[in-house]
Image (tube, rainbow, N blue to C red; front, side, top):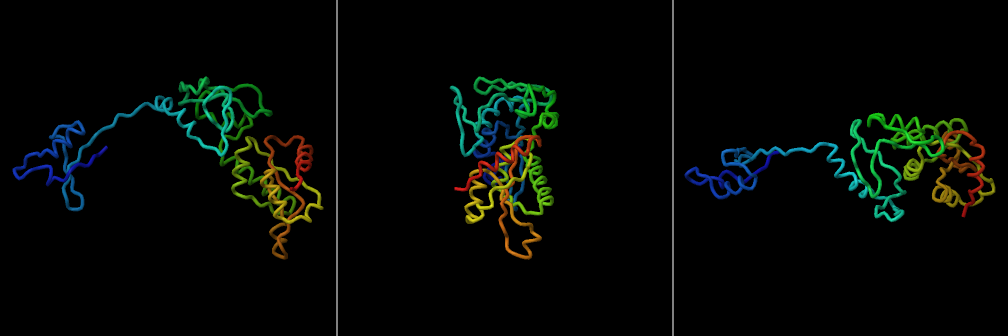
Length: 263
């Protein structure tokens, strides 16, 4: 690390002796006057000193910083559970903390970090041991959890585009809602449902607000190709994202349609 000091014109007197300014700069940085260097910046000479800052081992840094990192994560709504002081979006049940294959001993309230995690609540069972940090994402995928936010998001978008082609429609993906839904699911499965056509007598804004704000659904419109020959038209359909696989989608679809009652 390079530290800049006073100008050389101030650091030495007319007899080329070190001044109090130079001595103070050397003392402040725990170096001798002989270790001071001179560099020219924009035509003017300055004193400099080179210092080497000792680093820390990564596991030590993780151990010191992990609890602070977690406490600094901000969400619109946080909660406390039990008698713990920690606030988080949901209760923390376990913590995985690895540096390569070594467990970093982190303590969060009464929880001690380890190398075991759990997958999707309904699509996997029991705990799974993570042997190496590099295995984490792949191993979670086997437990039906897509750990990477961007990959989950892209999975949703890709499935929506396939539905558009299949049903000859256009699904409007509001960015804010898409990000929220991505954070609500671990293993996204996209499906299309429908509601009573009589609801279309209501203003589009009412239906869209009810879908997006209350149910986290995406509104469905006539396809872009059809819009080029006429006006944009809201259809009696919605697209939603299930946190699970594709089993019993008809039952899920009926349940989602049943709760859609525009306010």
